[in-house]
Image (cartoon, one colour):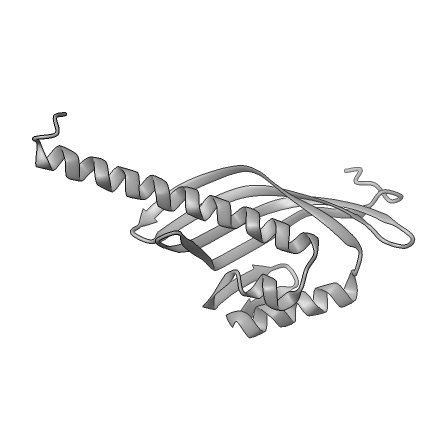
Length: 154
C-alpha cells in the first residue's frame, strides 16, 4: 500500500474506525462493571441508550427509567457490597456505530452475615458515536450465584 493509493488509504481508515469503535465499546463495558461496584440505579441506567433493553432471568427492563427501577429492586433484594469483573471479551464490529461484545463476568460480594460469589455471561450491543458509547441491549445469563457457606457443588 502506498499513500498515493486512495482506495487503500480509505480501506485503512475504515479499519481504524472499526477498531476505535470496538475499543470504545469495550471500555464502556468496564464502566458498567465499575458502576455496579457502588451502584446508583440512575447512574447505571445512564450507561444505556434512552431506549435500551436489559434482559435477565429476573425479567426484562426497557428504557432508562425501567432499567433504573430494575437495579433499584435488585439492591433492595441484595444490598451486599460487590465487586464485578469482566473476563475474556470477544468483540465484534457489526456496522458503523454498533459493536457486540460477548464476555464472562464474575462477582464477589459481602454483606453483614454472608459472602457471595457468582459468574455468568454478558452479551452487549453497544452504540458508539465518536468517543461516546451507550449500551443498546444487554443480556445477562447467570450461571452461578451463591454464598460461600452453601458453595457451588454440581
